[in-house]
Length: 134
Image 1 (cartoon, rainbow, N blue to C red):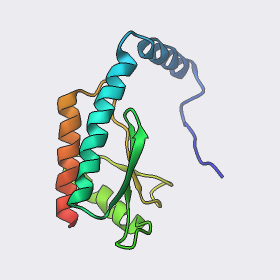
Image 2 (cartoon, helix red, strand yellow):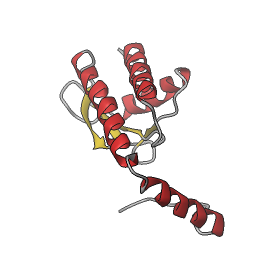
Image 3 (spheres, helix red, strand yellow):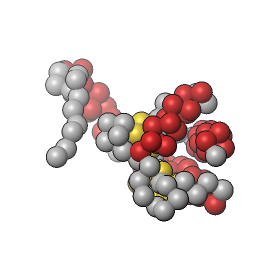
C-alpha cells in the first residue's frame, strides 16, 4: 500500500515548474554536484553512529537521505523518531519522519542546490539534536 499525493500537482503552473526542473537537472555538472554534496552529508551522518547508537542505517541516493532510528536491540524506534523531529524544530530544522510520521526513518531531502557548507551545517544540527536526545 502506497500513500503519496500532491494537492497542487495537476495544473499548468505545476507542469511549468516540472519542465523547468528537468531543464535545470540536465545542466552540465548539476547531478555530479548533487552526488558530491550528498556523499559529504551521508558520510557525516554515518559518522554520528559512533557516538549515538540509536542511529541505525544511514541510506539514500544523492541528497535524498534517510536516517534510521533504532532501539538498543536494533528494533525500529518510531517514538524516538517523532521526538527527534520535534527537537529538530528547536534547532531550526524541519524533519519529516517516514510513513506519515509513524515510521522510524528521518527523511533528509534538502534542496538540490545545497552547498558543501550547508551540508556540514545540516550534519552539525543533526548532531546537536542527537546530543539533546542522548
